[in-house]
Structure formats: structure tokens, C-alpha cells
Length: 107
Image 1: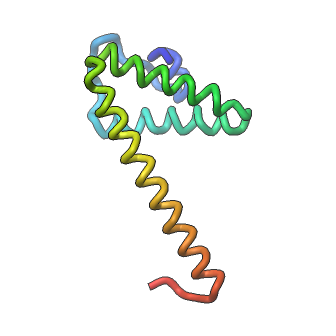
Image 2 (image 1 turned 135 degrees about the vertical axis):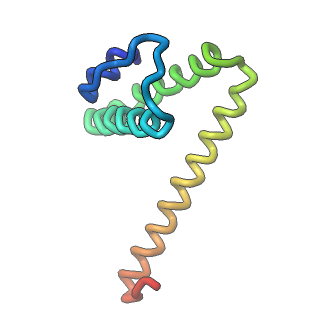
């Protein structure tokens, strides 16, 4: 996705090329919000397979354009960490829901 396309999604003007105008936290919040919106759209339109392909393409571009093939391992490590965190969160939520259904109260 181009910077201009991303700017159109959230209505904020895109920074000039090469100009860094956001803190890391601001950039993180912006990118997560944009990707969350795109994923919700893909789910709603039943186009997750297309979104996944586009995300894989973007990750490949990060590896090649912003580093080298060597950093592919770092990208995969980060993906693994995020998948693990999401799986643990989902498991904890299931356990809490089951306990609640069984009449148990949270600590």
C-alpha cells in the first residue's frame, strides 16, 4: 500500500517523502489502526485470503527494500511472538468464560 493510500484511510495527511514526523508510539498506533481497519474490511468482505497475500507481499518488501534477506528471520520471529501472544490471550479468555459459565468468580 502506498503512503498516500494509507493517508486516505485515516484522513491524516501523509508526511513528505523521507520526512520523519511521528514518534515511534504515534507511528505504531497509526499503522495498527490502518491495518486493523483493512483487516476488518477484509473479514467483512470475505477477502482475508487477499489481505493475507498483500501482507505477505509487504513483509517481503520490508525484508528486501529495508534490509536484506538475512532479516527475514527477524520478521518470522516477530510473527511468532505475536501469534503466541494472541493464542495465549485467546486461551485465557476461553478459560475465564468457562469458569464464569461454571459459576466461578474471577480472583
